Amino acid sequence: HVQLQESGPGLVKPSQTLSLTCTVSGGSISSSTSYWTWIRQPAGEGLEWIGRIYTSGSTNYNPSLKSRVTISVDTSKNQFSLKLSSVTAADTAVYYCATAATNWFDPWGQGTLVTVSS
Amino acid sequence: DIQMTQSPSSVSASVGDRVTITCRASQGISSWLAWYQQKPGKAPKLLIYAASSLQSGVPSRFSGSGSGTDFTLTISSLQPEDFATYFCQQGNSLPYSFGQGTKVELK
Image (cartoon, rainbow over all chains, first blue to last red):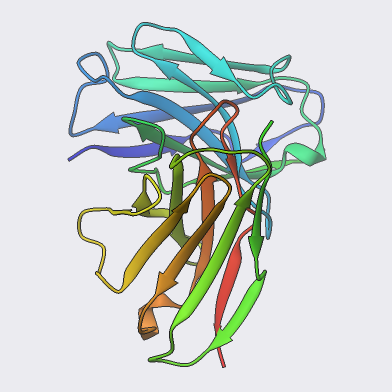
């Protein structure tokens, strides 16, 4: 079955760009009909949907983040990525990648903590 | 955007208790609702989708109901492994959104 694993820097300076990668195993991104998704969760808070990408490359983003977010897919590496620009302390959170065959998320990666601090 | 409101924010219960958590959407979402369980330091786990469909491998003591704007997650007989935080999520329209969570704690 499909498994996901996030990777990337755990510390990012304010105003810089946060970059994370999600590696998919146990299945091929290119042959899937799923949406590949990023979700984040600040410490002790709820979950925020960031955006998603389809295998074709079409994307949807949360309007609250749209001006700063880019999600891309690399089918040759079976990975998809998140870039969030101009970060501030408010972007400190655990970032999850997940897949959605329909409109719910399963499975999820284990999550990776990204702290924005100088 | 659709706002999801859960109640209560926390509930204290004992093993064997019946626990009910509610989720209200700010506008109708038909049956486009999911429930997740999250334990500390772990990713959320899908329990219920389409308001009342049990995800494969999830114990039958979990059930979901509702449609439109009002939904319920019920744990029929709380087990030690069920102490966790539960989130609802609407899948009706983008941007998808989650409730703020309900923490089920040991009484």
